[in-house]
Length: 532
Image 1 (cartoon, rainbow, N blue to C red):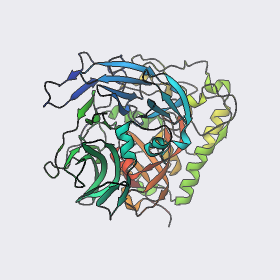
Image 2: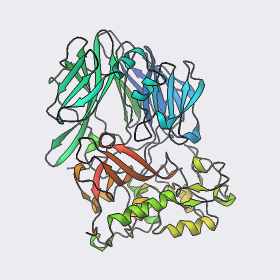
Image 3: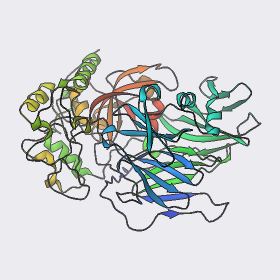
Image 4: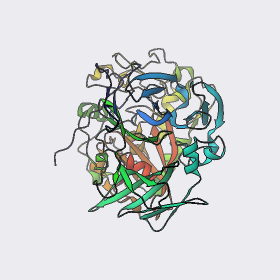
């Protein structure tokens, strides 16, 4: 099969033309297309090779006519009207790593996973107070917990009604939503990973189901919204999340308006689409599995991938069999050492004389950007910093370079095959690890493997086979190293990873569910030559 080419765009992508909105009649579904870029009527997309994507990550309805979008790449909240008009609603804290957005009874909530807080905004998008994130997030610490929020801040009326329902599973293919007075249920031919009640008014009940379907030995993920009539426990209609070929996927890709209109958001190449959910009677439409679930070697930016391999002295002649043996315990130990490494930045590390802390999207030159957690750092910090293209075989290399005054970290990336402007070629060069450099280090591979190269080295495994030391990889984009799997035999286990990520600015530990990872395009892989 011909390898599909992924188009990776950066904030430099500025499209001309206006937003396309198809709203011709009451029968015609809403479809809003917003170009990507840094302009006030655009939504940001930063998707360089071998780095986690920064894109619109969440959406919610501000009111029946206005959608609010969390634009991670441009660090702002954007308003998208149903007539297609786009405007900047509010700027966000760049140092806090904004990751999720939801609507509460008091107004929008913005989760900053980097600074561990939740900002409460009013309807004018002005911050009124901040809450500790620890009590208002899910296990992953990157997603707001709407059930908890329903009990503290409160949710809009229809969402609050839905939050009162508990979810139970009868096996892996039947979900039951129950409250004191009502019950809704659905049975599926495919495994149900998560079931979330979203909306209940006097006419309908809406829930989100994230599921998997087996195709031979491959398990693919899909998501759908399911609708029930208010007084009928049997599901009537469903609407499938549109498949996407792009490298970036939103984590909160769905929203329901106060009056009950449901929408999906998808990111495809040069635009972001917000599309009204197309509900049809259950069984009427085929399952739409996400194209990103099929593991492919990204080829759109081969020159940049080759460049990364060259600067890290990748040896294509070294056979997989030559990768030295290592135990799972040693892999996890090395990973934790990088995540927990304590060090004290010097002025040379964070304010190098030969580099400006700036990452302009459209200008060449020796661009460089300091990870936000190091901005203003005056004492000891924890974690090896993220550096695009960064790799070393042993942690002692970072320790020595940091003490010698190398710049620490770099969250600015090369965006074209004009490689002369990449900061990694300066002297002294920044030190740190990118996502695949971190995995290559933790695996003690003695070679640098990009996210596109890893599938050719490692063995694909089934999700239920994941163990500490394995990885979950999104070829061409990002990779995470597994350090723990809770409830591994359940339909939707919790998977704790250590990763070197731009959103952390460093090597950090996070927890995701299988559904989170599958819906974002990750594939489980296993290192060759493991001991025992």
